[in-house]
Image (cartoon, rainbow, N blue to C red; front, side, top):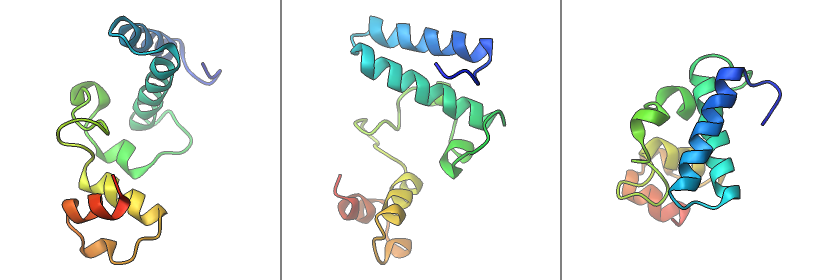
Amino acid sequence: MPRSWSKKRERQYEHIRDGLEDRGKGEDEAEEIAARTVNKERARAGEAKTVSKTSTDDISSGRRGGLRSHRGAGGRTRDQLYEEAKHRNIKGRSKMNKAELERAVGR
């Protein structure tokens, strides 16, 4: 756990990690998911130095409950796909819909 986390965030991290391990996730994967979740909540609460647009504009991690995980039925949002396309420098991304962005990023 990073030192910059408050006691509350450390408890949140441990709770999420333990819950994921109880549900069968491996230790490394549980730690990564827990850390990402806590960091996103820190960004939403204004506790982090840097934040991404999707961290602050998306619904909260707790409410979402995995609805938009990379493997879930709905998959990633159009905005998440657009950001990946932007990082990959895919041409014409601004005119693409969600299905086209999914094909373009190859997932």
